[in-house]
Image 1 (cartoon, rainbow, N blue to C red):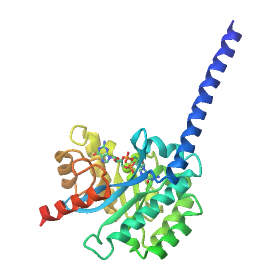
Image 2: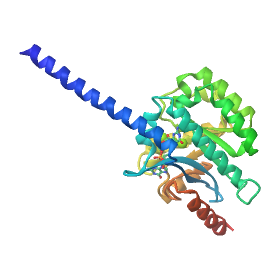
Image 3: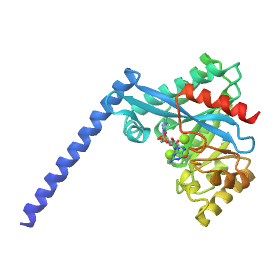
Image 4: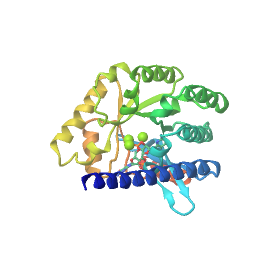
Length: 282
Ligand code: C2E
Ligand code: MG
Ligand code: MG
Ligand code: MG
């Protein structure tokens, strides 16, 4: 009987696994088609200077307009894309769009804005990344210091030596680098000394309970102090309340990003937010 049950379980699991594999392949194929059919869009979420309260830049966040499902968030498709070379093609699409945005802002009143773009682990370790960036830099003529690339600690720590070399190359071109989701990667802080970076982004899981959880408050305050001592700027992620903003500002955090100011929105809406940002601060 035990043997029979064992076999039954095995069949059950393998059927489940087949279905999961099948669904993943279907989605992966659908994503390639989405790229071909131009169903992706970059939304922009403002990043705000905590002292002046002005918008100083934006993070580009990928959205998929699925004909039936509507707007799909990246958490549902980035992990699938990351399992194949799709992430490299998708990542190149994102970079191309980001450069086009920066080129559109060049020379105008938005020329000072910084645009942050997320890189996946696989993209960071792809030998195609630097040549691709170089071709975009050459053809777009944008100011490289307006571009910031966001890399998570865990992606960077998958291959620290290679990441270190990549960051040196990026910085030598003037491109800025931020460590995303800081504090969630279970990695030693010593990499901060190893890597050439400009900014860290404190993960929203720490910001969330900043007012109620004394541990989170201490961690956030200490992280800001550490970053500043190392000459790095700090962005607080996931700021939803005025109290969270005030806490971060009191601890000298440089910038904030979160629903308190705005969600990620399409380009036209972002440019409308900017108009308010200037008239309010003026
Ligand atoms: P992330 O880079 O850490 O981006 C921040 C995420 O937090 C975004 O989710 C943003 O919409 C969300 N967020 C911002 N403020 C708040 C807030 O106040 N409260 C809450 N609850 N959430 C907030 P989103 O857009 O769904 O993106 C999720 C993740 O997908 C990103 O996390 C990033 O890791 C990845 N991703 C997004 N776009 C790209 C892309 O172009 N390439 C790659 N490789 N990954 C991307
Ligand atoms: Mg990010
Ligand atoms: Mg983040
Ligand atoms: Mg994240």
